Image (cartoon, rainbow, N blue to C red):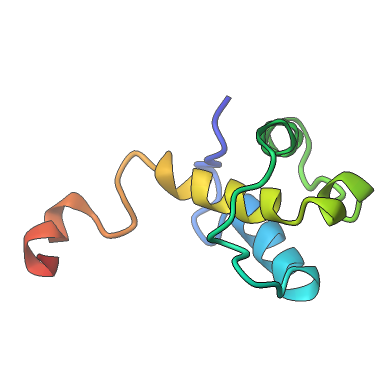
Length: 93
């Protein structure tokens, strides 16, 4: 299953939900540097794949806030074309 929602031309729901949640609950050291528990990341990913907007205030996500940040990083890693696109690579390097 893909995290990418191709029908939404603006900010994807997974990024919107995760970043809003992190801004409200996750202002901790290393929020994007530290990884969450792999099983929690996969559970959260599955919830986004099967529901429109999962409940991020569940204890499992509050207690492992890093899994929400990890899901954001996973989303960007799985993009078919990177955020800083291949076409712009030469200009950046």
